[in-house]
Amino acid sequence: MSAAIKIALVDDEVLFRKGIAFLLQREDNIEIIFEASNGEELLFNLDENETKPDIIIMDLKMPVLNGVEATKIIRKTHPDIKIIALTSYDTKSFIANMIQVGAVAYLIKNTTPKDLIHTINEVAIKGFYYNANVLKIIQETIISTKNSKGNLDTNFLSPREIEILQLICQQKTTSEIADHLFLSPRTVEGHRNNLLLKTESRNIAGLVVYAIQNEIAFLTI
Image 1 (tube, one colour):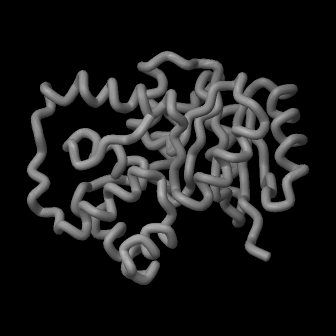
Image 2: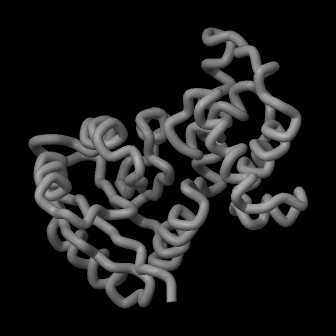
């Protein structure tokens, strides 16, 4: 049996947080290692706990240190930890900002338990997961800012890397990409790491944004 997905919950609404904890603890493959009521408490727990979470489920609006600022800090101090935003804010600016600072998924608090669990599992497997609504906002935001940024030179990417990047944008796993291209999973991982370095992306979510921005891939909505 594979190791459980280690989760940290961060939300200042205690009743909501406990409800999410109760829901997730019923899943055999999910383990909650700690909870926090704001970003500062989260950072303290990360420093104090030897066991780090694989995924942090983060509210945005919290006292002391909010979710956006906490995400910025964690991207630098713990880049391997994946952050899922779970918030009541569904405006384009909030979603675009959280994706930009490093959230690998964005959920609204009225989402279903099934969608939350599905998102956690997808993030654990693929490194990111955006539903149709979030993908639409990413594309619209990138299209509106593209002209001001200008096109980046993508000639330094090899044809194989572009092919793999396009498959990543289809939200395929490493093993699915390997099967599709008749490569070993290790080779795919190597290409993916090269893509991260070449595009200066912090995570797989960053690669997706880069691909859309440079018209390497168009995500199906």
